[in-house]
Length: 147
Image (cartoon, rainbow, N blue to C red; front, top):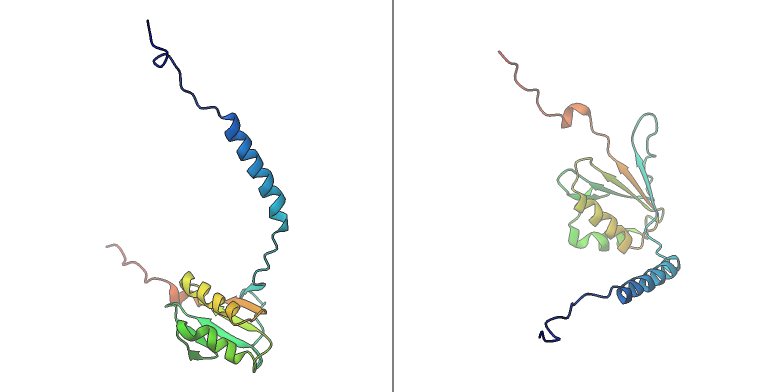
């Protein structure tokens, strides 16, 4: 005779697991519309064709991110450590917002750091422009001719 323990088949009952997942799904569907995340409003533009960005006035802070990831504010190089504090200090004299000009080959971390510093400084009006680079400046040298 076989013992009872050896003849038992162990299976997973997925009905309670499915019930838990359905309850979690319903909770997520109810809670998601209630989340009100007001991110940083951005106006993204590029310099293409005849549409050129307006020249910044003296009441706008200009932040430039170059191809190496260096950040300048109104023509002065600023380290990442002091960027948010520098922008906050300039906000009183330049209340119209910020223009962020980005080189097409700039590292993404430099751009996101600059935008984060703008947000930390309390600046809500931000325009982001991609700098237009001449086609010959960024193009690699022509391959040597085959002989």
